[in-house]
Image (cartoon, rainbow, N blue to C red; front, side):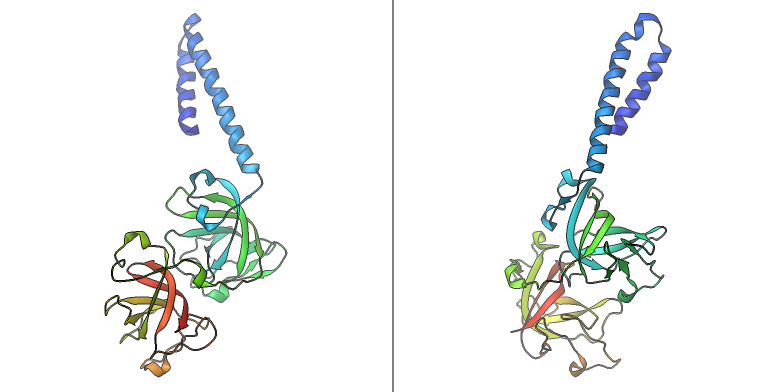
Length: 291
């Protein structure tokens, strides 16, 4: 809106300069009104820019009134999908500690440096251990840590972003997935598009495919779930609960190691319950437990 008013003001100024005598009185009044409007908008934007941060939660991210507002948000640090680095770099942010998929991307821009509220520049091919952030109090922060981030928030460009001015490490908390109102996937709601990007749950028996994927995660079949024989879940590689340990080239079921949320190994011969974000016709596993 401000850009449009500036354009109108410039046109009016040109017309005013082109007119003579009393003919320009109406244009003068109009230009004066436009300048007042521009001043009012500039003042409002400046006040918004300098306003104290508003504490928000993840349910408020799509609120258009929060665009270009200073906010505080609690989430979990993650590696970015890509990071464009110069004097700043990007990190990912998720609502839950083991989450690695969402409806919209959330990009946090952090200054590159060595002081507080900065991060070390990432190498071209980066891993979790390469993500090194210094918090507001000098504390070390890395992928998976729970943090409170403060900065300028944007939500109008098909993704969420925040220009970090402060990042503070918080004490980790245990997430009780049974209290999060996850929708249970069934054969009747499997094609429900309103579930895309939402937290869901399913119960079934894991079955390894003939080949696994390279990258950060791979797919595993979830059989006996009432979702079809080819329904899959995506599981991250790693050693944390809910992640798949390293596999040899010619693996068998005995080589498969997935740790449950309670620290006990997942039994590949018995039924399990998985929670995660539903997207691309699969569940991106965050939490898994034996039944």
